[in-house]
Image (spheres, helix red, strand yellow):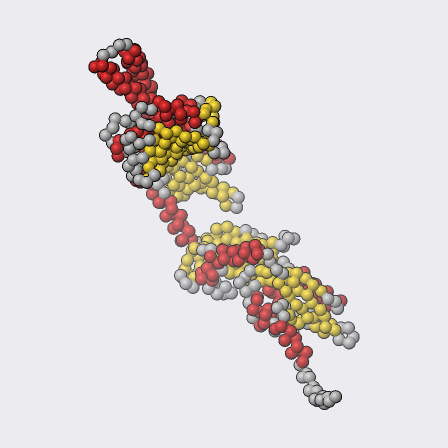
Length: 593
């Protein structure tokens, strides 16, 4: 057996250990770096810099890596590292790492010491791995990041040491260099010292600042007036570790509010906490005139004497409760006319304290008058139809009774025809009268009233079909068609549909009348052949006073199908129609049992 002679072994390079560590950094998905026992990094960590956005100079500075750790987690993370270095042991810690986009991610660091022969720690090898987020948490983080990026106000977060932890694009556009000291003045021209800036006050004193207006020179727009707000961020122990600040241009927000107030078709005002007027829109200025009637209680002088006491009492109650409140009263304009206004007033709160009130007053005079007129017309109509219905029904009943008696006597042939005509006209008049009364009840009285009782719809259909004289009706039923309905109203509904089929169907053709039982309802259908209903008429077919093309010259009121729908609705059901040249015209009534 032949063996190759071993080749001479090349001595390893002196930096082999460092080369192996570099290869390890590239081979594993986690971030690895080495640090001295003090915590300072010994070598560059490109993966760390790519994730955090730190520069090489920042990372290799004394404890530079710790600047990317969340302020709440820094002390605990460093303490864990130093204790492990002192005790020469393996360690692990979880912390939040600030990413390059300003958001934070949970990480787990695990370290092991490199010891010399005497057991002294030479350095610490540390591997950092991402703690997997749930899909929901990741989506929430991305959503929050995008919201912060897109808000129209500038937003900045500074750490306790003043370093910028995050700034959105809008802030960078407005401010430019974040590390530069800008000249900021109050609105009275006095210079605002950096220690007086809202964000500094939030960081150093824990002060919450809301809506402080200042002027400064923007690198983009020159001198501008902005509204600054700031608030401290505290850890679980109550210690301040950061502050959040916002910056928004006053001109944009005020213009937006003013434009909105001017576009509203109502009086709009704002008063201070003491009641003095601070703002009135154009409609309010025109209504109150130059004296500004909203100021303090001057507006009370314009109240109608009959409304004054009530309005003042309800307004005082709303102010005392410090809540939004509504009022309606009459108020005199400059011409001396009293107008009816619906007002809504809401408190303006700053830091939980009411600093003023914002109100709107909508002139509802015309609407109130129109509603009153509608109520008067409705009452008059109901009373008139009630009188007419009573006064007409009695003579019509007498006519019908007389024709019935005449038919029972021996009449000559030339007498029977006029009597039959009189009877038919009287019946039609009674039917029209009842339809008008039903229409009044449906439109003014809140809907047609029904009296439910056990009813067999199939039997009712058969009875009504047998009474028809103008048309032949083919009746069919499927299943148990009983339910709790008003029989008299269903007779009226079916009668209207059969008369509609007789008026518009093909003469001499049968009309199909069918009821079909379903689980919790019964479907009643009436189908006739003939010219289809025009598609444009279907949406308004069940509206009052609507008649088909063939019925335009007829003497009916155009209320039959309207009454059909009202009866169906009164039973908790509905009605629909479909029509085509091939299938004919079908009305389907859905009746819950």
